Length: 298
Figure 1 (tube, rainbow, N blue to C red):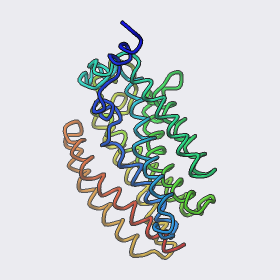
Figure 2: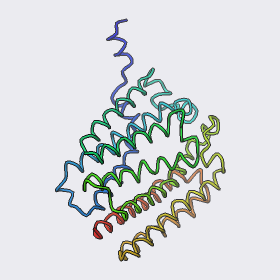
Figure 3: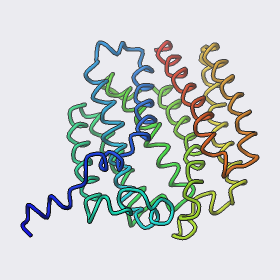
Figure 4: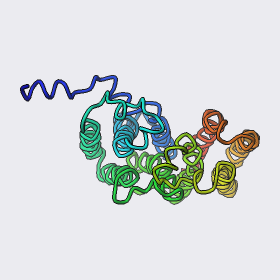
């Protein structure tokens, strides 16, 4: 068989590559980048190119890369949890998944370079976090503390800060940094709930997620507190800055989340996907309200 024929055999179909990049996961960092842009108070249409490029970088490229890297490094875990995924199923043969992750890494750095020094620096950090989360020797996902914290920072905090920095070509104001980091901290709880779907494989392969180490019910309680307390701090900060209406609105959303959390705690394993489709939407709505409040203060 010729080299050309070998490449043709190993090359996966485009839809399989898209499945590996998981478009459904792109929303959080894209939304956070939008929040960062809004928090500057600058009109998007005056810098639409930077906005559009940053959205593409945060979602399809960097987040997609992180999903490919995670699936490659988790192929033995996915063989237990989700054997129908592209790599364990054989639909993405050989080392193709690794090459996709590496090529997406290079593409992300190339796009980040176009966003200036702040955008490129943020891309370097995001890329490093993605590989540190999934790959040996660090493999931060083995820890129920560092793993969700890394994803929360990479998905919520860093894109928010990047959006603000790219639009202003400067380090964001301390108020923006504080709100972005609080929402990144709260996302630790969201990521803990996301770990419920991999409970069986994590136990079998030594991934010490909070659902594994604490048990589902205690882990769900911890996740709820971790999601709620930073939002309470956001409400307090906005109120202290005179943004009363946004503070009340986010407080109301937090109250609705509390109602959803009470239901979640009745059956954490069964209802974690439900909460990710309801409570998380309330969470990210609050993020955008906080971003508009920061933009008004600016």
